[in-house]
Image (cartoon, rainbow, N blue to C red; front, side, top):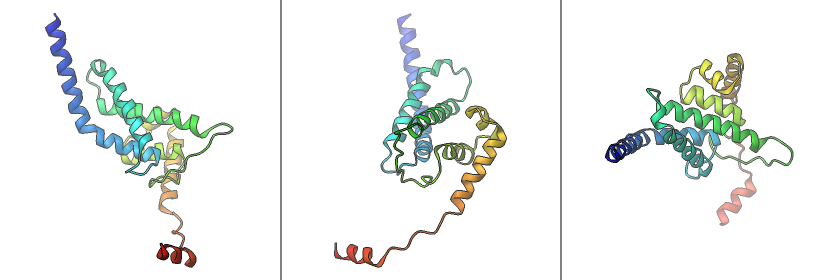
Length: 168
């Protein structure tokens, strides 16, 4: 009996390791886009990934034919949404200054944009996951896309700052 449980544990660990090898990079990239951190400095995204993978592993035996990537992505998205709500709402909350490509978007806009455009999740599924009407998801996605496409041009450096950099 013990040998059977041990072999099942080894099989489970191997299956999960194979899943992580194939999915962790993409999930980390999605988490980095969500947190709007720089790719080379993304501790919050790595934390979200770790929590998502731990949650998926804890439920590995109960997936019963479900897509483990979909479950990990769902957990990642809902965890980000919950943390963003607590981080950016309420009096005295300090908003972080993200540096990633989606930094100009709100957390909700980033979440919807990443799910819809990067992950390819259908509008109805995104709406169901976030508890929003599909029309609202469409509106937020359109607004976020327009914000990114119509970005203001970069500010030219002032003459004084260029001289200071040349001196350094």
